[in-house]
Image (cartoon, rainbow, N blue to C red; front, side):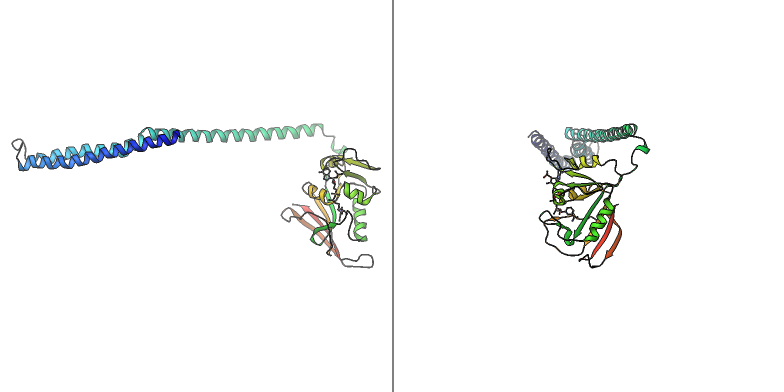
Length: 295
Ligand SMILES: NC(=O)c1ccc[n+]([C@@H]2O[C@H](COP(=O)([O-])OP(=O)(O)OC[C@H]3O[C@@H](n4cnc5c(N)ncnc54)[C@H](OP(=O)(O)O)[C@@H]3O)[C@@H](O)[C@H]2O)c1
């Protein structure tokens, strides 16, 4: 409202100024004719100088030009409105500058806090010989056409070659799984540390460790250089963001399923190796062992 009122007042005063200039112009034209008649027709003042009306018109024209400049330059560009706009521009430029400085300060403070955090972590971390240099988190899964994983909380196919590979790869390591997958297997797998993820704080399973989140499960496995996340669909979906590697068995067949592996985004994951196998006496479907690494 305040802004609208100011705009209205400004427009009104500009109209007045322009009207006055126009009136001045009309008076100037009439006055010039009047001077001409006095000088040339009625011979007034001719004894002093001839054609004095020209000087009078030039002088008046000069004053009219001054008036014009006042209306279209001085009042337009140096009036109160102009002053206000310039001040606003200046203030907004300064505000921009302040915001930039604030952002830079925030960034510097964050970087400082981050580096302090890592320095502190390094200080309290056990020595290299006591801990693992780098951990590789792997998602291991067998997926059929359309990323099918399983149905009715069970695997849909039987592929001994995949089970053999799974056993050989995961033996000696932590295997992290969702509660459904654990219940589908029904027991802890030998030579591995089974970690079950559940939201149930009272859940118990003999011979297994329980975590109430994926982060907690990874914490339990923090001293394992190569923990494996073995499913199912809910856990893969969450864990794929934390994984460094995918060990996938592609089963080249279509099955009816109710759980699926998340889409493997090739902008993030690079295929590092692929071995293709055809069917044989024990394995009824064609399959491939495929390894992906996070780019
Ligand atoms: N083809 C393969 O390689 C493969 C591998 C594994 C599994 N599978 C198949 O996958 C299916 C099972 O997968 P699914 O998705 O139904 O279940 P799932 O991922 O194995 O387990 C889901 C359960 O994990 C717990 N959970 C999930 N996210 C959690 C979180 N953020 N925090 C705490 N707890 C969490 C919940 O347990 P609570 O309900 O107890 O809270 C949830 O009900 C089965 O059909 C199985 O055969 C296939």
